[in-house]
Amino acid sequence: MFDFLRILYTRDQIADQVHRLGKEIDRDYAGREILLVCVLKGSFLFFADLVRSISRPMVMDFVRMASYGCDTISSGVVEMRKDLEFSVTDRDVIIVEDIVDTGYTLQTLYHRLLDRKPRSLKVCTLLDKRSDRRVQIEADYVGLSLDEGFVVGYGLDHQEKYRELPDLYVLEGSPCVDKERPI
Ligand code: IMP
Image (tube, rainbow, N blue to C red; front, side, top):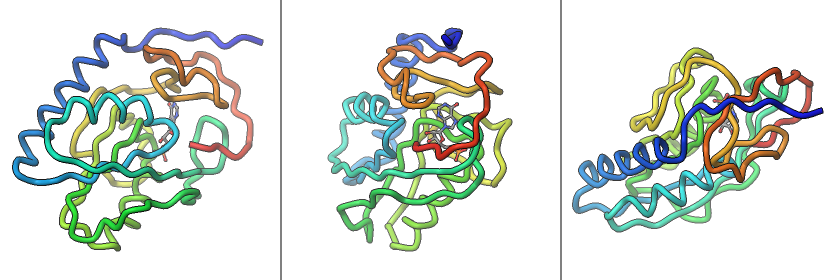
């Protein structure tokens, strides 16, 4: 069975927003070194483009989170599969997410990092899906917004497929199967 993909944002629209976000971060972090945290796997392409659009000094680190539930809807049970290698204490940290959907994943990671006493902690997300939000958490930097639908491409997957697509698509008619959903 084949999935049907409907184009949501083109690679040019994505590139414009990534460039804008880079400039906003440059403006806000003048004279400071940033620790950018990539949330694997979905953020890897966004992260790679974003770090190249930022001109401030930076270091990078990577975390991996997983949530459980239906394959397109998070249950709210989130675990950290891979922790950071650097300490965040007294650093200016930006979490880089692919999408904030229910908000459970970001909330879990945000509070874990906040407990480690960074100097500052902000969130940059490529996509903000506010209609599905279950917890109160906001990103400081938002690339693009959407109201509904499950998105694939540009790093985002459905059952590990479609990450390689250069544009963003809405997956039409995806069945909901109870399973572990790696992020
Ligand atoms: P949340 O915990 O529901 O906010 O979901 C966060 C994570 O679930 C994201 O980092 C994504 O990896 C994954 N996710 C949520 N919505 C989508 C989507 O529409 N497409 C692909 N992955 C998604």
